[in-house]
Length: 418
Image (cartoon, rainbow, N blue to C red; front, top):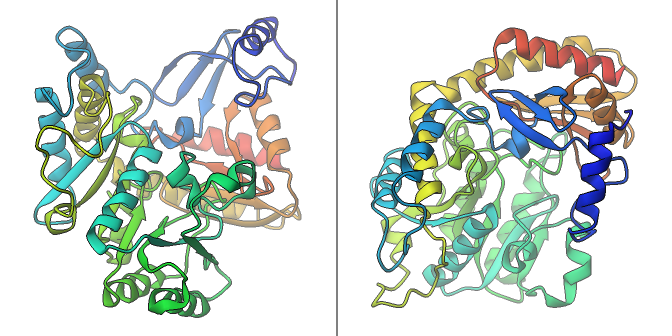
């Protein structure tokens, strides 16, 4: 893609101040300056269709009116509070609204700012509740990059530089993405829970659909069988729904489609409507493993329950229900899956097309995902490569797309692939 002078200028400025580890500026990527709904404008004035939802965050679209209205109102009153000492009132309102859609009769929630925050809180909760520090996670998993979450993240790219600092309490088992079966995987999990792990296992953490690994969907019934095995052995099942939750896959939570109620759920990404916000959620009987605060919480942070993030979260939850985002994701996702399956049928470069709701992946027979994403960008569509080798083109667009916008983006993607 020809690099615009504005992009080169911003890339040069960024390279002079940001750690070189963070942003790949070799080809001067578009620098975003404005976004609304499913569209993004860059510093060069170009407009793109965003089929990433900005890493899955913009399920309700960029700057949803309900989110923006809540932020404007909150910004005129309180920007920061003292989350665990003098709590912002809006934190209470947000937690009440979130608890109302959680799957347990009575819930307790630890708010955070990132998906990693939610995972860290869940892992701590599991150890307090079971007294067992061991964890089972899955090959291909991505749960975050803080040290506790990183220990449960599988990819060597993230782990290897810090392997000597990671806790040696996690055992990885294969993720049963079709066509492989789940029986062997479940047997391995059972053995680890029954004592094959050198560290007693108190938690199994799983993504209902693996996102960063390339939209890997387990066989039907796997999650339910896994939940039964975990429950029988007194451990906790942690569902990392940071990517899949809040309507992305066609229901509020991806576990709903498998008839599974986990012991703990991690939420993030879409939850804040564009603001940093996450949550570790569970039933009161599990979450009460935490001691009551007597003035000094043992798990907290300066920005816990930040008023602006909680206000945005309230706006998103209003949009989730009022705009039927889960239903829209289900219907648009079915159309997208059908269109891509037909349009790419017989394409030698494509190994598989899969997805659930508005979480879709096109698996290439080679590691050409980055090439496809660059060609799509030239045509005005933003998508991302996924999978360990970049072999999957991942789509997680906003659920507020019109059918015409959906079709236009899919046609660009097919042209880029072919």
